[in-house]
Image (cartoon, rainbow, N blue to C red; front, side, top):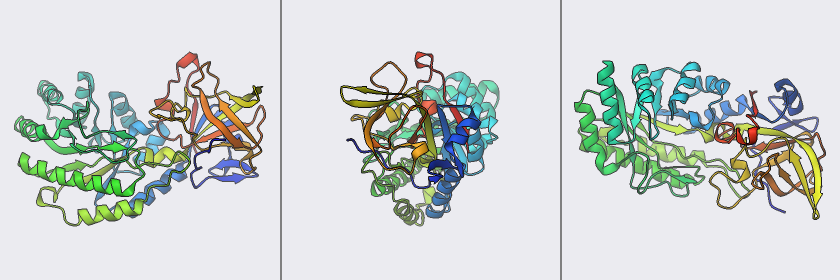
Length: 408
């Protein structure tokens, strides 16, 4: 048997069946029109935002990283809950605008921005977090041709990384950001060229559960920003400190101690140096806001035995939840939290593997999991799929197409 990850707190049952928003998932499946289906709990998202507001210093603004989940109804919800959106493409910019987010509350990061994307952002008044000197100069040329002023910040490639992070975004040669030693000269160049100077963006890593490591990194980001501001010779108007707040996916993972993160950050914010005295401070979070609020539902279409092993074959798979299958940056495959949704309160009865409908051995949603007995027609729930699920998976593979989505 291989253990399952922990089901996030906040899920309940109605008549023994998994429920979201007080409604059994079978009813939500019927309302949505079938499976596979992503369900996102608005209540859980609101609770997570409230938790952050209660623990982070009031001065620190909360930004949503749209790449985590760009589902339009979810973006409309987030618009009213957070202070800004961080986007990573022209497509996300359009989605954010359609959700009603004001351009002044958006910043645009990511390497390889095309001229058409830069131009759209400049015309709309979105802050560009430039990733290289070449990108900054292209933005300045485009702004001059358009006859407007570009709002430019610099994404910094720091000399450090976030310890224990699942994806390291600093600490060496990276395609992301400008090496910290090159930042002051580039900042002075864009300011002299007439750009509206919007400060710095530092993102050192993601998916960390160690509160001490996050607090340490935030302190180093503040120190770095103060030093760079002094070398630039201008106070920082804005500092995006990145995020990296993780969620528990696997057996043995423990939730992030957000109180410790908030307390440590409050201590630093209380004694900021003059270079940061007037800066807007922001954290950029995606997965931590929406990841645990999402559930992927897929229906069992076949139950089969092979060499003594039992397989539940579903109508979903890795084409919708690539990360849950272990094929999205995981070195050793481990089980996400999974349940038989219509027998949510039942005890384990057997060891089964849950597989998807694709003709590849990579399409596994659970290996040798201990679960209640399931038959054809039963619903499998895969938890922690509110971030990097539908939009980060190859839904076109084998012509399967996207899953349905619903905000509840």
